[in-house]
Length: 118
Image 1 (cartoon, rainbow, N blue to C red):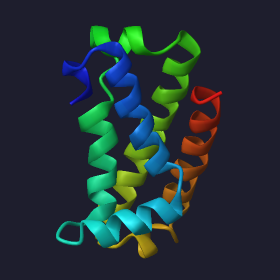
Image 2: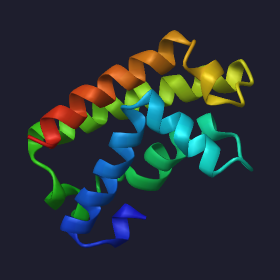
Image 3: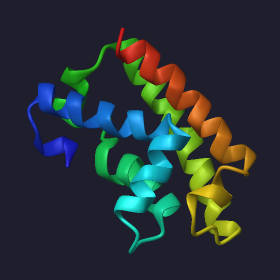
């Protein structure tokens, strides 16, 4: 988990999940590689509970103030997407990709990805 890692490793780990959140193609590939779980829920959990720990010192040290704001925005969009897929009982990425909240999360993740990887 990101909150137990040094700042540079925390940053790398969070960016890897942001990359996954920002790409429908990567999500579909991930689903092929890890077919034994409900991937849309897994993807949300990876970020919202596995990587996003804004009060941990490693997380605080790993990102700038602007990046923290972007990551918080992504957290909100990912949380809403998670609620949407849970409400609709979405089990596969192809169905999640049809949902407006999921597409909004992807678009936000693309913005975060561009800003953090500049």
